[in-house]
Length: 151
Image (cartoon, rainbow, N blue to C red):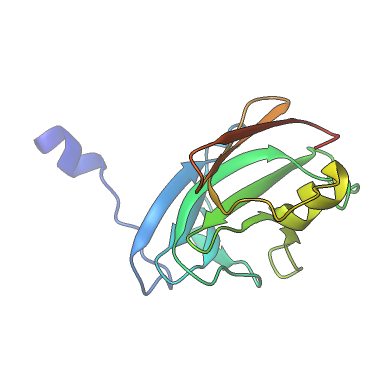
C-alpha cells in the first residue's frame, strides 16, 4: 500500500463533474484525455498541470474515447491524430488535440457523407482506432469498421 500512496497524484483542475472515461495519448505519455458525465471532453497535460476543455460537447455523458487518424478536415495536423469521443446521444466527435477551442468534427455526418448512407445510420455507442481502422459500436448491436482515410 505504501508504494502506491507515495506515487499517486490526485488531479483536479476545473473538472467539476463525474469523469466517465480516460484515455492516454498513444505517443505523448503526459497527455491524458477524459470525458465527463455532462458531455464534456478535455485534455490534461500532466507535465504542465493544465486542463483544456473542448468547445464542442455532447448532449449526454461521454462513454468512449480513442486517439486516431483525423478526417481531412484537419490537414494541418502533422501527427494526423485527433481525439474521438462518443456520447450517450449516439454522436461521435473528433476534437483537435492542440486546438480544443475550435469546433470538433461531427464524425457521424462525415461517415454519412463519405459512405452515402441511404437510410439514417444507427446511433453510435463506442469508438476505437487501430492504426488505419475505425471500429464503431452501434445501438442496434452491429459493429461498423471503416478504413482511413476514406471512412
